[in-house]
Length: 96
Image (cartoon, rainbow, N blue to C red; front, side, top):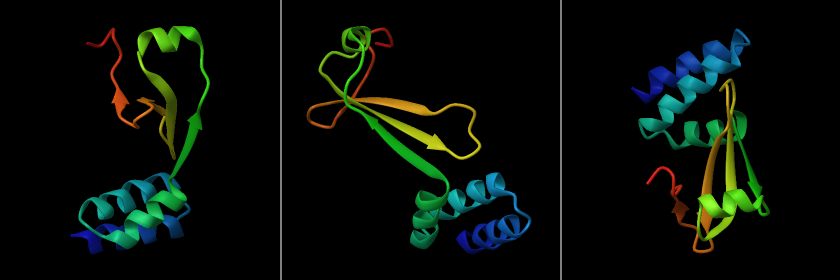
């Protein structure tokens, strides 16, 4: 199944449709294709780390150390996750 998604992703990239390329290469990686996983990381996603933040974030996420921002190609908004000093994801006190 991974091969089918890889082949379709190649068609999308030839059509200059990078959004659908990224969707299919991600699906191929979900089916265990390690090469597709690397291609997805290199072409379709960017990670940023923020080490300092406002006091309000520290109040909402006790134990806060840093924020990991994941920018996916063609996504409307980035995904933000908050981590403590032990690199464990922290839940918001408001979500709890």
